[in-house]
Length: 471
Image (tube, rainbow, N blue to C red; front, side):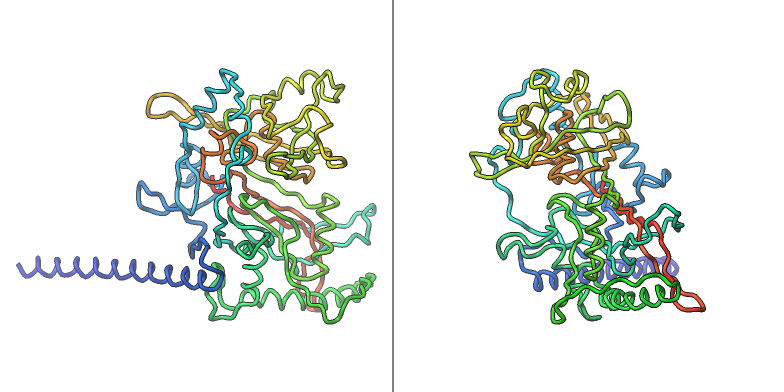
């Protein structure tokens, strides 16, 4: 009897300790969230969580995000084998298969009704109030390889210093730069700058850990002198100093943009030199970006890999009194460059996706656009009623940087991106609670500092920054 009581007391003690730890975790999480709301405004969505873990409502457990490389992981099993879910707000969220099925049925009947063609918010639906998601994160890039300068390389080609660049994960529903109005002041630029200047006791940002932010700024400033010392020792020509206002302080900011509802990896310049050089590299197509998207239906093109090439420009919308991005898909009778085979691929004739004549486009806005695609996997999910819903996971690489390029090109070939409220039919825009477009990788060349007995040296390397897609 005494042994039974002792065992029961031990079990009770363990349960109490577990509950205490759970309560402590929830309290810490709540305090960080409350502090963030107080510092950045009440209309925010904040989560002080580990972005690499996703909650499974069915098992009440967390799953580690591992990407598509680890085939033995639970994440791979859920996302690449079973399918039918995405990660939203760090919880597994089912794709609305009924909406996919309805869209597929409409396509089979070829009923391109006006309400379906106009799609989501292009039909006049108001956007929800901006509630920024502050679950951004600092990403540490990896050096892929050293690059030897060939004789044909231009020695005067400028490269940014690795220590002057910051790579971050931008969540969906967070602006890159401030929008119009005080309610849209919270953005990637503002929250990252707050973190970079944060003190060790500041927990008001989702990623602040001690002095990590300020230490990165100090290192960026120190790297300028490292570069000058390394250039002097290697007899390389020093950079010409540009005339600047001595009183003007550079504020770190993004070198490029991601749409509000697109998530993924971004580059922040910590110095004016890094901003100037990296921006020039984007313009010269010396930075490679790759995305992962979920699109409606199965992409049944001739090959698993190919290129979509339709020019993109702006068309005036009389109803909303704004210019909107559209694809130009010329018909054969218009004397377009597309041949019969290319034109026959186009399934969507939606007014919010394309125009078949040049006249509607704003003068000077029409520019060439190219997107590489590679089919990752085709999913066929069986529904409760026995019917099947289909979608495709596709890797996308924009070879040009036009507005809404990836959305428009996927919609133009008849496979709009899930959750797209701008260029997809209403059925597809409601299939997922967010746009299923994620910037997975950024590759570029930089100069990396390395210590040696003779001091600091600079080495030309290829850098890779990655962010695991939420599906």
